[in-house]
Image (cartoon, rainbow, N blue to C red; front, side):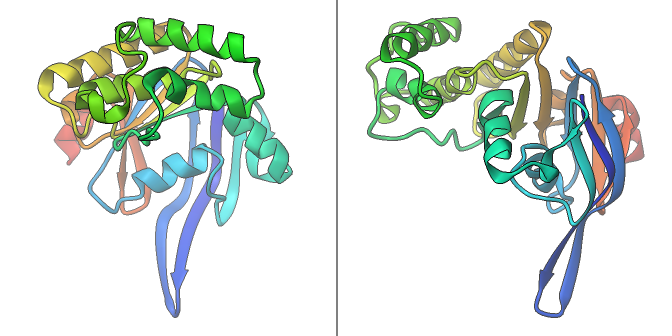
Length: 230
């Protein structure tokens, strides 16, 4: 379970203070699929970064399975990111000079897994996302949708229990968008927790529930409820 306890995030620049998240408490149970919506600048990516053990709150605690993430030593926090969390980005963040199968192996290299194990798992994951015939293609040789599927396969490399997705369908055509959302639903059905930031209300509707961020505060409910309150 992920839990925020009275979390506040404040950015300071010279004499100015911007509250990105304001005294927020929320629970995300294991196996949930949550979408986070809200206008630009509402704090969605900030919230995702804090949940991903990348940006400490100014106040409050963020707990993963009962353990306060930001009270851990830096090395242990890095292990949490590496072994429990998977990240999907709008811009894919693939390494341009590596092939698809090499890109998928990167997280496993950082975890010091053996080469044969890395290659076998990378092949299996790329087959899972329908790219078994694109193993040796570099990102520039793949379509935008194929690049996102490589990114999905890479995200699964260390078998994370929680997936954090930041606008995962933002650059995709409608067919590829639906395909990516289908994969996320599949991953959720396999027991993984999904937390997805999106501007796309119809994509948000794929989640079990929706959180709306506005002026640093969270509202929860169904997608339809939150559209009515917008």
